[in-house]
Amino acid sequence: MTMSVLEPTGSPTAPWRPPWRRPRSSSNAPEPGGVVLIWEGRILSCSVGDHVLVGRGPGVRLRGNDDSLSRRHARIEVLSEGVRVTDLNSTNGVWLGGQRKRVARVAPGGAILIGRCPLLVGRPAPGPAPSGTVVWGDIWFRSSKTTRLLSQTALMAQVDAPVWIRGASGSGKEGLALAVHRAGPRSGGPWVALNCAALPDSLAEAELFGVVRGAFTGADRDRKGAFERAHGGTLFLDEVGELTPALQAKLLRAIEEGQVTPVGGGAPRPVDVRVVSATWADLDREATYGGFRFDLLQRISVLRLEISSLRNRPRDIGAIYGRFLYELSGPSIPLPAETLRDLERRAWPGNARGLRAHALRSLLGGHDGLDGLGGATSRDPRSAAAEAIARHEGNRSQAARSLGVSRSTLYRWLSAAPRASPPGLTLTEAATDDEAQGDAA
Image (tube, rainbow, N blue to C red; front, side):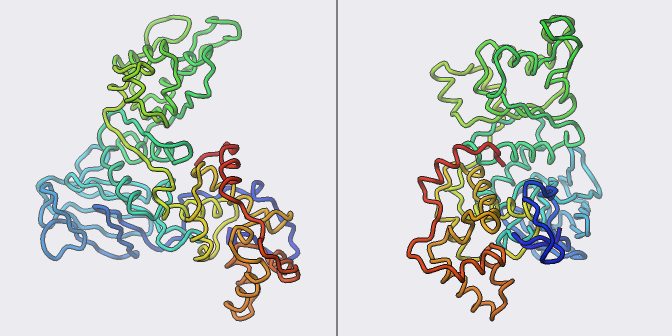
């Protein structure tokens, strides 16, 4: 769709469709015309046709100090569909999917190892995300902290070992786990996600390991469990710390032996999966005090990643908020600087859940009387509207877009009486709303 944040496409009289009724835009389909290379914590924007040398010698554009790099290690050619990486007869090679390559193509959202150094290929994000936002897979970001985390993620993805991700609720653990899957050698295999906290104790074993016909009332057929469905790919176990001690023991055996026994008996079935788990809880502490099996923790946490809450990476707030607006209503101009500052000042205790709820409210604000982005600022709406119109030299459509509201809302603000305290979402209200929402990013 080619539309502003709030206004529908077509004629002004076209019926408005609620944002949750609109087709969801792919979060990995930003504006074409270039790629973003993420290398050693740095970001380089490139255009189609650019050639970039990588190595540790003089005269290269992407330079690294790792001793696995040759002086002129590889050449990158930027294509419309990603990049082509050519090994320049280096000592330690170029690696993709666990195999050494002479020439390799990497699409946006992918990664490749140059020597031991991961190179990530992303895209510049479309508006309403703020300038400088990068999309890598399903992750929208613009902070240096997340840039470093994703480089670490891409490196770990190349090692076919279990990964434990720790982070607060709504911080993006599943998106990071999916990045591990897509950037690793199992990207062509299935991705199966299971929320362990939502599994009833009576069904958890069957969901994990499968069930044979007649095992219990209602088991009218054989059914594969999550391990078998993920064979050849990645199994993501969200909130694995919520499993009972008995299930923890069976999970340990399945991971160690590479085989599962379905509920109801039968011969063990071999499985080949990479387990990526996630928790909000500190499993090291839980294991110390007996709340989680220490031996299982050692098995699932060969590699570890930790993702911070949004309050510790405020530059990502606008990027994630822009993603939700884009998915709900399509591309538009980037978020106004004042709106961005207001978003970054908030605590967002629910992390991405709270951001998504606020984005939806902002879209509804122009159509059903709820307060949107304009109501979240510290200014009187009438003054905000008048200043935006003056800033855009009388163009009311552009003024409305800059405020993130529809033209009808802009007119309503202009006709409203001034008020000292426009309604907005206070920090206390935000905390309550965040905890009530269920759709995490």
